[in-house]
Length: 358
Image (cartoon, rainbow, N blue to C red; front, side):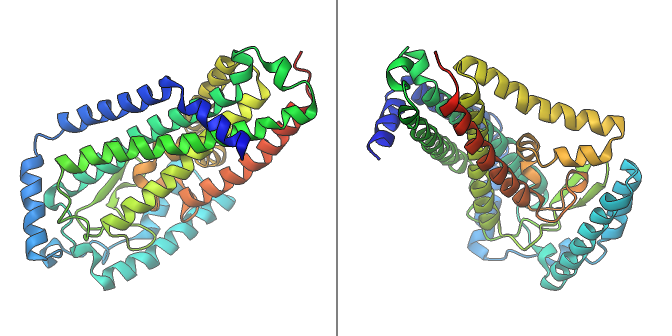
């Protein structure tokens, strides 16, 4: 614990991280304020709902009464020319979503007003644009934390003092953990600062108790077209926001851990950061390339990568259209990434202890 505290102290005394966090919050504040031209109208609408306590309106209609999971499955299968196991997985996914739609119809989930006619826009603003911005910044903060912690001795030319033996090299696990912990602190600081600004501009008092699967909330993509924002279980805005934050936090740790594995394999911090950048960008590139080339199975496999999870954060806990083959795709993908990360971290640690650093 003494070594871990020492490593955390070194990171905390690095001005770069605090400057990065501050600039991130200021950038987010500017973006939020610059996009608040219709906040007054929505805030008044939100307060009216809160005061009245009327969160539902039957005039919205029941979008889940006519929900056709089979139709969405057919569109994806036809568009991607799927067959075999992938076709079965897609059909199975939408069979399960069809059952959820029946439940939502019985529970009158569609009647929730949410943000009225601005529902889809305001939902995208928070869960697509702001959340993706936060996840980008916190991932970078966490990645830099891990790489700077692992590369500290090399940068300060003290490797020959700290790592002369295999015992001395065990300090690397403390450095790795310190980087992850400090990255988690960065997530808390940047996300909290950003949300303080966001919710001071946008009044959600009348929105928190609404359901994100309101009949006024839609997803639109090229493969499945316009469809309801149907989640795998009923989520109020509060519950969906909380679940997204938790999953986003874990995804940030995944990015940091991935950078840590690379940092253990490559001694130079800048080289490790460059390789990390190329790797996460290549995940997106391969996803697009395989889709365009017609390699549907490989394309669907790439949707489990951290980069694609980050990109699709605004569709978490929904069917995710052609970007997922199983229910709760984002949750299972994060679990699989954590398991793979644990294995690669152990292997990278063993490699570091044995390699020649001279």
